[in-house]
Amino acid sequence: MSIEVAGVSKRFGDFVALDDVDLSIPTGQLTALLGPSGGGKTTLLRIIAGLETADSGSVVIEGADTTGVPVQKRNVGFVFQHYAAFKHLSVRRNVAFGLEIRKRPKAEVEAKVDELLRLVHLEQFADRRPSQLSGGQRQRMALARALAIEPSVLLLDEPFGALDAKVRKELRDWLRRLHDEMHVTTVFVTHDQEEALEVADSIVVINDGRIEQVGTPDDLYDKPASDFVLSFLGPVTTLGDHLVRPHDIEISRYEQAAVTVGTITRWTRIGFEVRLEVTPEDARQPGPVLVSLTRTDATALGLHEGDRVWLRLRPGAS
Amino acid sequence: MTSTAPAQRRPARFRPALPSTLTRASGLGLGISMLWFSLLVLIPLCAVVVTASEGGWSNFWRAITNAQTRSAIVLTLEAAVAVTAVNVVVGTVIAWVLVRDRFPGKGVLEVVIDIPFALPTIVAGLVLLSLYGKDDSPLGINVANSGASVYLAFLFVTLPFVVRMVQPVLEELDLEVEEAAASLGASRFTTFRRVILPSLVPAITAGAALSFARAVGEYGSLVLLSGNLPFTSEVASVRILSAIENDNPEAAASIATLLLLVSLATIVVLDLLQRRISDRG
Image (cartoon, rainbow over all chains, first blue to last red; front, side, top):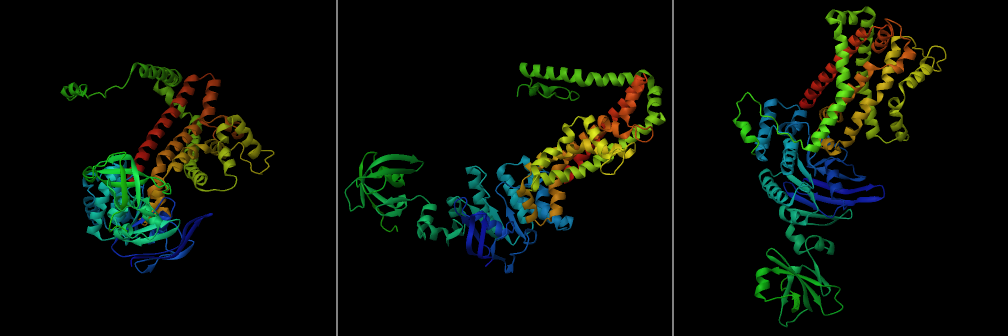
């Protein structure tokens, strides 16, 4: 196990950021800390890095107890949401910073920096200032800078949070490929469930200063340990007495053994997907049921707004 | 695009002029600013230089190499340089304390910093005289009629410049940048020297230039305390006044021109220095 967090608690005044958290993060994996804002995930990451000290508990990195070790000595790479670039230094000098401080020979620094700049596709921008780069390029520079010191763990705090959707998607894929090449133990914080599901080997769901569930993306999506995890990892709707995913509902215009009968009151098309709101006839149902299906299916079933439909859980869905 | 195409066809010795962004309204604005600037600054400055040059090079030279004048100029410049150097260090420290530390009385200190700025200089002179004057200094310190009084007065009036220039820049500094440096292994000192200081250098330099310029021309706050003794505590501005009083405007203009040149040179040198330091990192 690469990172062992045991019994870590942290309060800010009256606010409990972390409440007796235990967590093991295996070596060489890409782990996501996922949760709503204010849930404590960034605090946990900063405690692992040594940027914040826990009120109680211990942090062990690669077998060494680092609880009282200052951030300078922990040899962790940290990437910030807003890049934290050294504005007065060129891209090259930004990446070289950690090595220059360690007083490595010039030739070695040069070689290492060139290699990293190639890795993050910034060779041609080496002599620019960070202010001349786009957000995505700046974040790649920050990543190269963190990797330069050959950290035992790489920690990223909402690394793509400040970028627009398209760049975020690109960087996400790119981070995954980079991790597959480098195999450095990586932990990243995100509030975006799609990002976590897509990139991470394992996901730690954190809410209210506590860990809700740890598992692979499939585990979490298919076997959520709580309603919170279920609702945080994707859309949910209430069918009968159960919380279910809208795409796990079977919909038909013909009478069938159904949980709920209702009328399609809203029809939203988003690309290939169609989202329906079905208002149940049974007054005990709290509100409209959300159903999502592909456009092709919707056409094949001959559905229209205003149709009376029968809903039931798709066979095989939990 | 159409405006740059003919520019490219021009022979190389003509530098293609930057396309003007002036509209009718902004042209009027530029005209007013230039007129204002000329009336208030450029024309009086030229007048001083012209007056200084009326007696020719030899008269100019004689005026500024007069033993008493030279001594006054040397004292003024020495004190201005020393005081500016002190301000660079102390001013940065004060700004740091005001921005980064929380303590009771911080709000009061914020206001007090500006007092040397807001106080009429002659009032500042009175304050200094009553504290450090000859007869009744409550502190038992007597610097009246000595060279030290000049340093003291300069220090008093130039205190806010570096503080007020550095403070906003320091407030804007991103704490995450310092955390990034720390995570890369930089100690507090290394972080300050290699990350924080380079960001502050332009502000420190600007503060230093203001502080120096103010010191070179200071008059009101020191006349009472220094006693204006020739060869001991007489400064350049007092020399200019006495030259005028002795009906010798050429000598006055000569000293003024010299001070002007020194101030200009200082600003240029500080700017070059600042560029080099912030580039080096």
